[in-house]
Length: 309
Ligand SMILES: O=C1NC(=O)NC(C(=O)O)N1
Image (tube, rainbow, N blue to C red; front, side, top):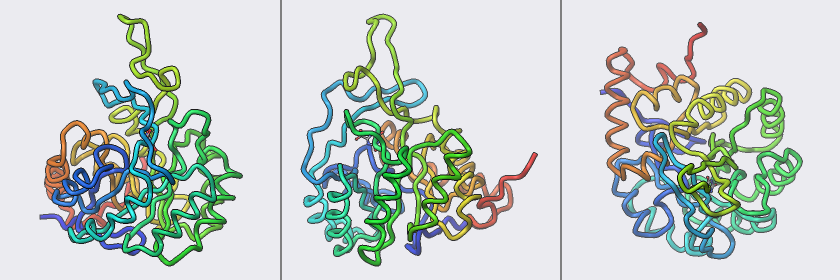
């Protein structure tokens, strides 16, 4: 079999796949299921300073090729996840805490708290598109810079940022230049494509309620965007930056495409939401078979090796 072991920001992972912050990772029960699955790490739902109910329903809709959702960061509040860390760690795999404060001060408080916990990686979410009135930090370069200047030196646990998808080469370059100025140890590309609109022509209305129907687009639709973002940031940030790919992975060959683009590891969201925890073992097996057929023995044989046409 192919060796799928990898690491992100110096944290060893038994395999290339983990869950993405978002679906089915809010409660202790859900995180327990992930901990006992084949997923290589446990990634928590982005936590906020206070517990949140999230946006009004309907706020999630399955689509033929993915989903649209505007959950609005429903979560138990950061303290609940801080309290959970020991029991999550007891399941024997790295714990990745996703943090989504509504201000630099909130992020600073939460990052500081988790720096003193037994968590392994801190993934600061700069890209939730679903909080009414809150623009995505990742699309505001000055805000991103201000946040990184406050959040990267609060302890020795690796800090990473969850980025929105970018669609312009100049934005890749601007973000890479900012990231290089701070000790960001990994980036996770990409969050959903924000503020998309799915209309039901029968009801003549949007399919989700929050923000007049505007929500994050997920799944197959966004794989080409996730691949482009992973590839661009790998080329701009070099081999030492941890890069986690996410967006539309549901088969071993999807995961392999992210490897070619340069991902050190990948996260699964929509496929996990639809299929459940068996997806991790299935996709891992498919990736191993796919790579073995090509004669590869380990991830580094193909990582970042997308060929020019
Ligand atoms: O960062 C997020 N991205 C999304 O697409 N949705 C969730 C959410 O709305 O909670 N958060």
